[in-house]
Image (tube, rainbow, N blue to C red; front, side, top):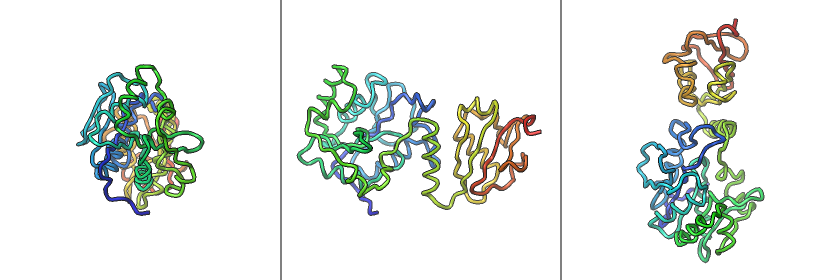
Length: 297
């Protein structure tokens, strides 16, 4: 699929200030393809758009992104607040708004949305019987209307759509450019995050793909049962433990040591052999179980 090399005269607005309550940790900082998720999304967009703006919560910590950063005036007011602050900060008349947890953005679909803004105020996809306000195009001139909407406590974007010239992009139209609708995929839970990692791994060949299942205290500490990891070719258990520590940093010092597992833990590969040696080679499709040494016998 041909991708546009540059989208002139438009701003990319990336919302990063949500609560991440279902995820249990900040979505913007989740590791994704070797970098924080917010950095992944910024990298996809910042060389395409004339300008990129990230909207964060008032005290939110983010990595250095080399783009404009603005803050919500009040934390956790929902997407309307983020959209308002992004539009108000833009130097361009037209803005594409997305979220920090959208790793599969389809630039051809985005370009198509931008071409539909002529004569409209909003261009918004309609996918699986729902508007997709965080994959939509807005005019900067809507900022005062959004500010007034916030003051009235109208926190759903659809209230704006009912008042202005809104172009709805149908599911059939979306599928012509993005057959699976992956550009609209986002992540709200650990399970959805792991599914996105598996999908990314599937679409990016040349990597070793393994899954790690946690038991006992390890599962309680991580608050998740299973994770998927994408590793370099010729990966070993040392690579597994390193990637696991990046994906689930809460395991460091409690389950993971600097060079493997802390004493009292062991791992099993594919339900066959209990091993601890970091040099043991792993291959795609392996399932690795981490549990206490007592449980492993």
